[in-house]
Image (cartoon, rainbow, N blue to C red):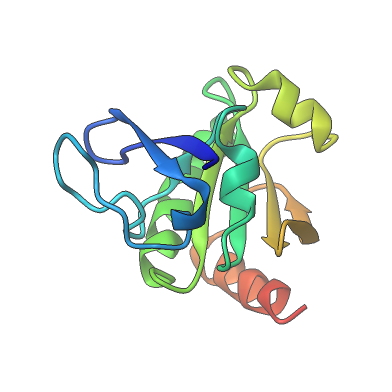
Length: 144
């Protein structure tokens, strides 16, 4: 049985899950809150591949803590994650902490937002957007 590790968006404790459960409504072993509940998931090299295998589309925000547009876009990304809860998984990749992931997806500017379906990239956009424009772009990207 192959497993992956995902941090809880509530208490940040790491949870090891079977790969088959990436699309399930898993709960945190520590705080018992849902692991995938409309809050962005923090990706790392240990869980990114498993997250991309989800049956749901995945939206990844490649960002860095020193990037002002990234920090300003974070609330928009979180609000959109809540609006699309249950339909789309939202993932954040800190390009400073996860340079290998950023390099593997050829991230040249941040924020970069990428949409994946079935583990394959279907669309991407560079730069922060206001909420209405981001939602409109995302809805179009999900149709691809």
